[in-house]
Amino acid sequence: MYFTLRKMEKRIDFLVIGSGIAGLSFALKVAEKSSVFVITKSKLDDTATAYAQGGIAAVTYEPDSFEKHVADTLDAGSYLNHKEIVKIVVEEGPSRVKELIQWGASFDKTRKGTYNLHREGGHSENRVLHHKDNTGEEIQKTLIKQVKQHPNISLFEDHFAIDIITQHHMGMLIKRNTPDIECYGAYVFDKKKKKIFTVLAKATLLATGGCGNVYLNTTNPDVITGDGIAMTYRAKGIVENMEFMQFHPTALYYPKASQTFLITEALRGSGAILRNIKGDAFMEKYDARGSLAPRDIVARAIDSEMKNSGSDHVFLDATTVDANILKNEFPNIYKKCQNMGIDPLTEFIPVVPAAHYLCGGIMVNQNSESSIHRLYAVGEVAHTGLHGANRLASNSLLEAVVFSDRAAKHALKNIDSVNWQENIPKWDDEGTTPNEEMILITQSWKETQSIMSNYVGIVRSNLRMKRALDRLEILYRETEDLYKKSKVTVKICELRNLINVGYLIIKMAKQRKESIGLHCNIDYPKKLNATK
Image (tube, rainbow, N blue to C red):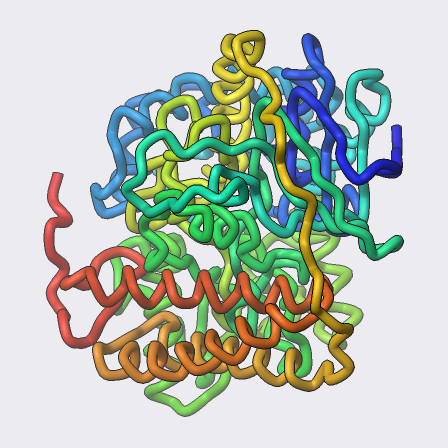
């Protein structure tokens, strides 16, 4: 069901901001008892979930086991993971995957009727359930079909959440260490009507994804701009581990595109080999697991090969993959390559690392509740402790369904004891005027991405990060000044959010006096604290 917010204030039991796997699976569960608004800044299917190719990792058959999945996750995360959280996700994961199947998600099977499990980098067993090479799209379509049919769920496309509402908006001075900060809902901008509404909720869920667009090249869709993290940080919520940005090693190299096409790791699991610009296989120089080493190792190896040769890409050799497997199990990759004039059956595929997945985010507990009461965060926007210093491939969709389930159970248990907050002021934009110089926003946007890509990318240094912070500080002051004077637009809000998360990435990277996992600082070449 699609609705329009007609009054300047709406009251609802549950407000869900974001329409990917985390937001929609949560909405379906809480809707069994209460009313739900799902707010999404674009269309329902314009999410990072829809772009997920590889699949969802879960223990399905022997010889795989919970113990092996836990061990692989800890190893990939350099043992900075919270072990208890890893065990929770791995052990509860198979039941949550069964729920996806019950909702209608289809995963590929063998001729014998068993699931056709892929193997990706860092996994010791084949355990990745998939639907061809568009698993996320399959899950997204399944969940959208379910929420559209649910009578308690109202869907609002093209609605942008500007800020979450706390005691700050009622005149209370809030600091990061202020106890008992509460979330009362959010200020929401209707993009089509260009009006701002107050949505009051007994519980609010942020499922807004990561912040890949803070970098020039990313596999994320354009809508992923760090909104939930920035909103929470402005509201004095706790954010952690932002320095751990995962760069996917193999995005299709196309220099004119900002959003790059992902070449799933499962293709390497089926036999594809990474080669440098000379055509030489190189991964064995860096790790005994070769092209199937964890992503942080592979991305740094590619970065090293590119810098040593002066090239702007390396190659993925898929000519080693059986032709039937390539065509039938990876049809979208095969078609995309052909459209680019590349025959992957006979030619190497040019690839380059691209910003892909944030392993940090809003700090949450085992019920996915943030440090702000009544505010939950699930999916890439949240820091649960599962990933540590580096995410194991295909653990992200699993994390989302496990923690959306936990958040739903916790929120439902407490919802009857919560009332809507009264006397929340309307959005005040008195004295602002429409911004008629879009160049001020677009140029600052490009500068932010350039700063982050050049100074705070795969490999960093103290000097680079200091320079990045100095440059970003200027952009922050300019943008905040423009924001205070201007009528709200999505673009200026997104720019604020990108600058905010860029600052958090740099700040937390500077605080970590070691190179570990996804954070590689050449001033700290030794890998510290990465022991069992």
